[in-house]
Image (cartoon, rainbow, N blue to C red; front, side, top):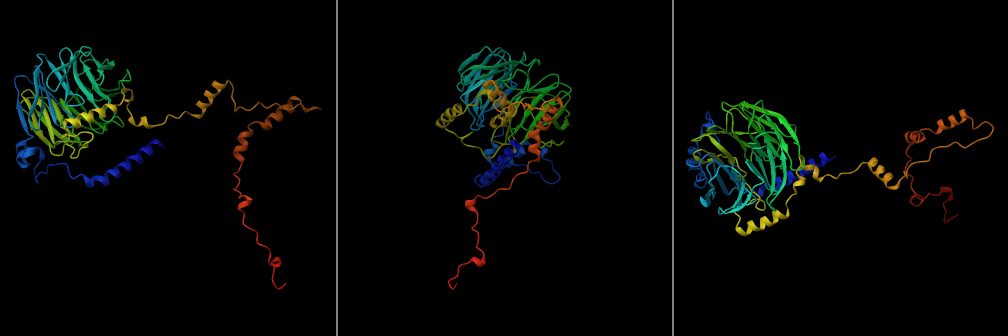
Length: 475
């Protein structure tokens, strides 16, 4: 079956990847505590003092009290950082070298920021409309068809920017051509909770009635509607593989769902409800509970966190940096970069996301990505159905052939008994003759026995002559 075929392909891919692990020298980090000590008691200062100088430089803090609280976003290679303050301050920088790319003030409320397909463009959701800027801070476009945007998610393989507005509309913008692909009224009220499934590009929305809905730009109704909490949904996140979804509600519960069965796996009651959630590349779940950031491994969700850190003010944004053991947190006092050993993937695909690529390599990658762009019509809940062959049934083909020809070429003529003389064509005789041939095909098929394969005469062994008939030279 198709599931068995997919399973065999996954096993072969895993075996092939295991053979190539010898070529990957990098190993993921981890944090080990001494006997009788918990890792959650280890502070960021202790971690920075124990690691090398290059890793210690990744722990820093930006004090920006004037324009906070801040939303943030990392590029897919994890090299550049985008910050957006509620009071209009927007900054883009190379956070590893601390090089500022641009810094502007839009003089308007900023609700969210998002990088587009490359570090050359980013989108800013302002109070009235949606704006697109380049990495020098120059305004490229003002999209008045996207008013009141609260949250944004960029789908990199489809070049789509999904936006959720305060009026309850979910809209998709194709950034490669600059056109709106779809606009759907979710009828769910204000949309302030949004996440995407990286495995199938399905958008997850959290609502005030405790439900989570899954959306595709091809359907006007939700693909799935899940009741996750008794109160409103505050935060939402989906892991890298698209298997697990974490939700946090006003009931102070943190729940982990299996998206294969849409059933809860673990539930945890926090002292203070989580307002922001995010998954790392290696399955760590970060939860911001007011000014406390807790990191737990998934899918186990233990009671005691893996790491814990207190921010100066309540968090307003939370995001793991790709391919780095770094967690970025935006809050009312600015931005804080935290060290989380074991969060990022140690080995990256240089053809997919290369943090050290040059300008020429980025341009070539951009052209290749545009050529390999996936149409929005292919976004579905089960992406494995795209490689299946839609074979029509035999009955459907037969009906189509009958409609095309006007008759059934395989139908047999109705049995009509031959007229006989001397009472052979009476009503009783005709009925008995019809009963004899009724269901004849089924009887022949059920009682027929397969005949053994007979070898042709050309391949039959030569017959040996009798001993008496053997010719002798001395007869």
